[in-house]
Length: 225
Ligand code: ADE
Image 1 (cartoon, protein in one colour):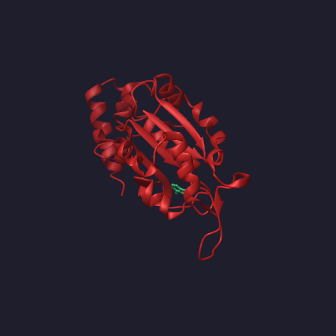
Image 2 (cartoon, rainbow, N blue to C red):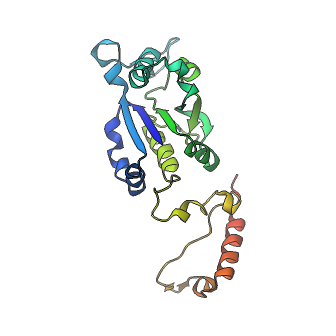
Image 3 (cartoon, rainbow, N blue to C red):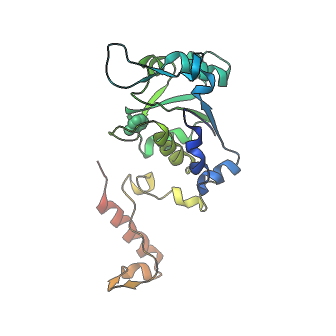
């Protein structure tokens, strides 16, 4: 998969790229690229945003700036880009990111993530360049970078080769394997700590009973609304 992140802060992704599963995915041939809107602005002095028409607080990312950045990266009119790749604008009011959407996006060949800043995007960016609007939750972040990282993290860990153990992503919280419910609880050594004992069944070595206990624990926890 190829993920391109459009942002004013590409350097913010340095830590993200060093995470094991992201590094594994990149080593396996997946690709993460960055485009800084500021590098492509047609305006003077690196301007990328402007005050909102009609008044109000904050600054809005300009449509001509985003068009120039998309055009520079893909060499075509961004209005047509949606025919070949999902172009996702990260906004607080977009479709909520959940496991089903992550699965859907993990099946794509290429994603473009548009991070907004300040008050967000000129609406024409969303209407004419984006195929999707995605939110990581109903709260407002100062910018879309953290949201882009959350989305890329969740998608990349689903790709073959990202996780140390290929089964890790199969039976986890909200997966089909658990009927969409949260995952069962995990325990590790010591088997007893301050009198808190690990459930006996997990120490029994009886795989069928362990499985049954886990599924029942998971079902008792969910599904979450
Ligand atoms: N940009 C600002 N807040 C956001 C959110 N909650 N989700 C996605 N993008 C955002």
